[in-house]
Image (cartoon, rainbow, N blue to C red):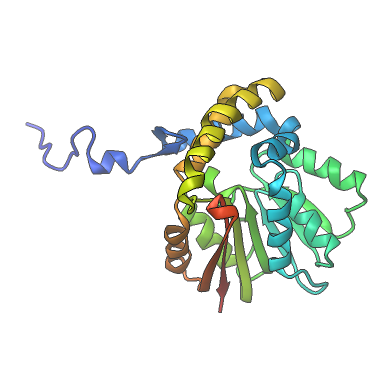
Length: 260
């Protein structure tokens, strides 16, 4: 007779631990990365246009604030995780920052970013690499700044990303995350919900011919940790002097922490 006393029943905590969010759906952890990759394969060519649509252009202001907070200096290096089409890397270099490695798990997104870098003449201090942010192929304590903008919510294991960021930072280095967050102005919430779940998917269908991907992007924002929860995750990963700044009433937020 087989002893099943140590076998978790279906739907148990042990089984649930093997699942993660993909928007409002629960999927097995190993399924999320291919699903996310398919989303960004689909939207890569229209990504910049859709960012303007999704945020009414405000993402450009948020990114300028973010890059300023990163503090570009010629002697400092940057690892840009989930670099997408390059806005953070380009802002860092134009602001006087040093050597930059722009990465993304999605080769199509990275290709768009590389083409943009070439068109803007930003290649001398910029390199490109397909990288899974949960497993960064850099040695310990090798960079001064690590950034991730609008990418952490798409990662399967967010704590692994934060821990990896800390690992590769030099002492005195800083990890910064710009991400959609939890709206903190009650009057704004119903307007934001209507925009996210009615307008955005429709615009995605019209502009990118892909309603489902933009439905996922809207849902992924709602399942992402709120400001305080993400700050606690930074602290749990060993980062110090953790703080956050809410932007546009909490629609987005900048989190930062230092490796001391």
